[in-house]
Length: 152
Image 1 (cartoon, rainbow, N blue to C red):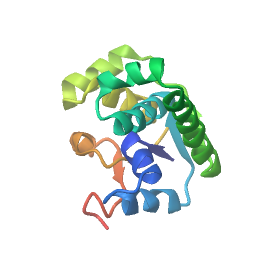
Image 2 (cartoon, helix red, strand yellow):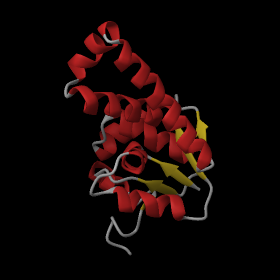
Image 3 (cartoon, one colour):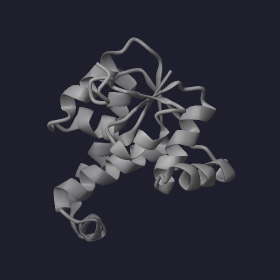
Image 4 (cartoon, one colour):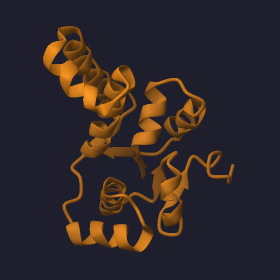
């Protein structure tokens, strides 16, 4: 089973130089899951892309009806895409000891450590990511797409 990380989901939704790698992940004929934190990260990234700064998001949400409507549409689009791709959304890990272990052992940021914990708790043997911060965990979970990680 493949866990879909924020970087893969974002680059599937927004055309970038990494979009081809994301497309390869969704072509794989294996069950796929993601989690709420991934959805939250991608939603935030889309909003930040539009206003240029995380500090401007709050201001725009409070004072700009069009931006609020766009924010709601982004979430709907994320969820619709995941549904169309048959990606199951699971709850995030709440095993804080394990999450802290991954931060300490592998130098992961807390959200990345929680993503890893969630993937492993749900029995994933692959982590679909374009985030090179995960390279430190390649010995405990296979990183895909292979073409990005130099195995394809």
